[in-house]
Amino acid sequence: MTQDPQVKTLKAGVVGAGVFGGYHAKKYAELPGVELVGVFDIDLARAQALAGPLGAAAFDDMDAFLAAVDVVTVATPAVHHAKAALAALKAGKPVYSEKPLAVSPEDADAMIAAAAKAGVPLACGHQERVVFQAMGLLDIPEQPLRLEAVRRGTPSDRNLDVSVVLDLMIHDIDLALALCAADPVAVEGEGEAARGYGLDWVKVEATFANGFTAVFDSSRVAEARERTMKVVFPSGEVEIDFLARTFRNTTPFPLIEDFTETPAGKDPLGQSVAGFLKAVRSEAPRPVVTGEEAARALDLALAVEHSVD
Image (cartoon, rainbow, N blue to C red; front, side, top):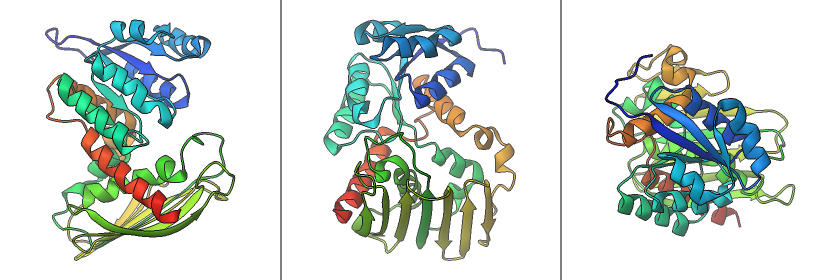
């Protein structure tokens, strides 16, 4: 793919050299118009192991890292998102934060304020939104009546710094908020910390001001993976199997049957990152998911947690 010679190649950096940091670093190494130049991690050896094969530099000094880059992805454990993102935003760097945006409303608000003050985009990695867009589901001209989401995973040692709500359920929370224009007004649920690291399974029902209801059922201690969603509209239903990447649509509104063959369907993360870069370049008015939208998802996620306490 050729690049417009008038367009500056953006220098990208990734904070966090874990699994998700690796995904993001490789996307920056692949995408046009951007160059991966740095990986920051408090463990320099880990940063070197990720950065070296991709031709980037490794850093364990945040100031030096920020001086070397134009844009930053934060892919640390969730409890450290705000600290890294605020450092980057205060240095005037656009930020793409993995989900959840933060783990407290105060940190999320501080990130949004810092981005506004710097005049730079703040994006969040709710990449399932890209799949919804690829399907055409966000274009259905009806408000849904009900949503039922199941997202279950098998036990893992990853992401135990947060509950299953902030780890898995928040994907479906963001999708529900993308579909429904109203705000949630009540949440009732149940759950359990099966392994002592915080909530491991949760099932809740959220009621919205316009009568829409959303049922979220998430587990990270299930026997098998399951990721499904049913959205009920006045005119019909859409049922989605996210693992099989298939759907059934009984509404009169056409969806994109071969969405898995579109660029967004094939590579949601790449499209999400590309959307962030377009916003940075002012080629798009906003990233796929804004900081404000991610903060709204965080608010409902924390309300879910509180309903189970």
